[in-house]
View 1 (cartoon, helix red, strand yellow):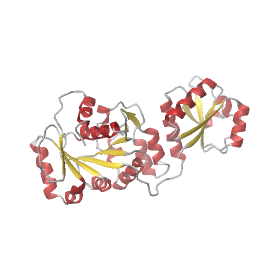
View 2 (cartoon, one colour; view 1 turned 45 degrees about the vertical axis):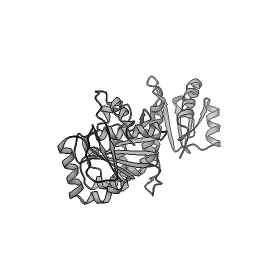
View 3 (cartoon, helix red, strand yellow; view 1 turned 90 degrees about the vertical axis):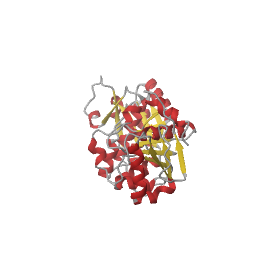
View 4 (cartoon, one colour; view 1 turned 30 degrees about the horizontal axis):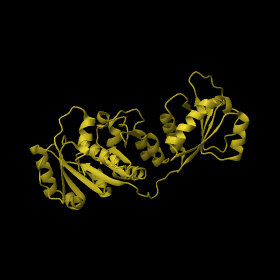
Length: 333
């Protein structure tokens, strides 16, 4: 879905700058139009239908916005806005264009129709899991995402750990994924549009900023997880899910939806023992082993559990987390 967006402001240079960047970098989701005069804006609003509008305080008071699904005030902090303008949600005029787009998409997602119907899966889903902590799941997940991105695929990294490690690997400058969890809970709005608006991107890999608190992630149900994964899979070629070390209802839901599962272990006896117990004592293994790949991380040479595919990753000595997973991406397949 592409949003028809009107930018109406007397600042023609600003409008030109904003619209040109949106047209180049966000054309897949926004169809932008511009006007800089009151008469022109009146004519455009009368002759065309827009989903959303960014209108400055000088124009918004006299504009007929009855047919605009989402009217927004394009606002500069130093401006003294009149009473009509105060009725509308403000979008800060002087911020990064990517942030303006994210705010518009988030606002539009919240007022859009519920889209909980069947989704059309687009992404290949890869789950990264281990029964033991500290084996390098996140590093493996990001190495796999980086590998796919280097091959020209759109890759998205989704962290479902109780405590997110994303801040170690990414600059968190966007909105928290908690806003998505809130929409999952209320069951109102367009979650795919919201995800599109708040996702960040670094080195070709899309990701989300960490939850605002532990409970935001902890209280998600298996059904919530399924809806979240379904919405994410509509927006990318490769969805890589970094999972917790548990094996409960939520994790089983991820296993069921995954096309491929990377079972990660390292050189420690604890990791090898726990993975061996999982394979021999847990009925889930029998359900997933045909789509599982054993990933021997940090120079490990484990051969159990018995799966058809095995990857051996070297130990990379570096304190630079980015360098580690980028180096490993060359060895992962």
